[in-house]
Length: 114
Image (cartoon, rainbow, N blue to C red):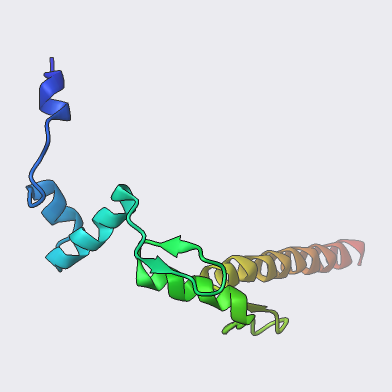
């Protein structure tokens, strides 16, 4: 049986677990700690919302400027975040797959009816 104290004991910040999670830069660990400590040093000048990382503030600031740098090549719709564009592109892929299935079905029916 595993000892409860063993599982819940405080661990040093540079334990093997943390080094595996943040292998490149030790500084990333300290930046990431802000997420759990709820330290939010970066604030939005427009609405006052605060963030633990500068990149999150920069992404948030695009909401206020209405800047949408990520565009769909199919329907010309634009998005603030790349992740939203990637999710949107799935819709086009699904429609294309459905269209291909429909055309295959039509071709098969045409062959059967001959």
